Image 1 (cartoon, rainbow, N blue to C red):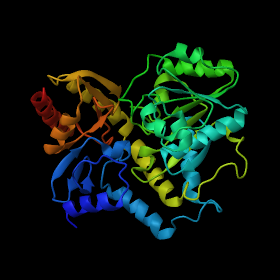
Image 2: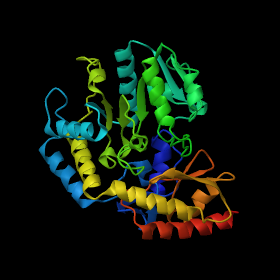
Image 3: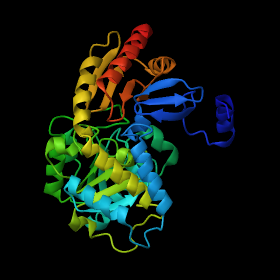
Length: 388
């Protein structure tokens, strides 16, 4: 089927909830993707941080293929090996104890919200303005973006939103009725917004003081993206609950909610569940991904290449208002709408993501090399200078 036919059928038969770029991608190799016509693009979107090992990893494909050939989803009515192996692995890496597996980031947030309310027997939850946690009713209630929430009101009660990165805003809002505070270590969808120094430490202290749980949404920042396996490691603190998804299984759908043992015990039989959550295929993919990240030292590569990338981005003339980020989670804020830059880059076969209208967001695979960064910067400089 040719590209034009695919795009026509998409409009006819798929609900129009996405603003798609006008190319049809067919395959990938590392940090490159190829369209239906065989054109090669550098991919700095990385499946929105999901394809953390890059595209077309043959070892990954073989591992998943072997699992599919054995069994796909016997469901959680029975024990399965890949699931417990992954749970043990994530407990060790996080410093927490028990996991609940689902199929997406939004679902991992839903589990965290339910667990926090069940454990504390309180309903109040503090989240942040412009924060993003998902589009289901629970995760949308935690989300701080009014534009995407307003069409679906009323949402769940009990949520209050405060200024991100401002410890005083939390101190002035938290009460004895607060069950949890949920924050992103770095706000991704808001445009790679960095908090003030020691922000997470302040949140941890506020939770300790008032008996509230600290929930960290590491859906985008986790799995080595920021130069640590978990972004909270930079601050040397530990949350009560942490959520993962996106890069955990290199593009295969999975979500994980990890909690301290005394909190996890509050979930009893039947309190939560998922037909597909923790299935052997997704868990096999996640086990391979985590092992590969650690074996190939991709967390260190994210730190090194991210630092280099940000330094070089600062040399782009005629455009950037601010460069911010950590590891390979980087935002370049422009003075005006950056849509033309995104389109110009795509025309020159460089894929970048636009978020918050003015921010070019970079979430490449953690396998990216300096050469690919340099090639990308050459295109980006040319496009940015032509647009300004």
